[in-house]
Image (cartoon, rainbow, N blue to C red; front, side, top):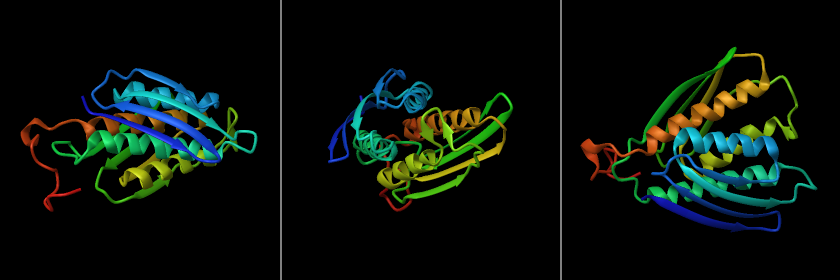
Length: 195
């Protein structure tokens, strides 16, 4: 089993995160932010990555630190579980519809961070979350995991549906990218020999 565990404590957040890349999509998640918990549960469920995560943050200030630091912790735990990335597919992509909307996510676990976020939202908040925090979550994940991460919402009207389709597309893309390719399970998926 490929597992990673992280404890991340700062003056703003206290986070414990454990992942199992070869899991069944089971999750135990508490960030004190209802809608965010829902999105992270979807991420676990559709990626088949087991996630055990607890975040205690300074939500009395705002939600920014909790969302950003949670992304750092999840990314770091996944990187620990991936180790040298030997045998993984490396790339993943998925289109996910949700009712009237369609979103795409493409990922490359390249060792180079880059986020492209072509997602426009018409609301300032979904639940208690500022909608700008979704960009911050994926930016922090890309930076810490050192992956290329590209999102595009092709169309849609309902902001909840748009964000949910983005998280599901991310989950499906991540699931494929971290899976072992049996044709090269002993090799690092790069012509350079390292990621």
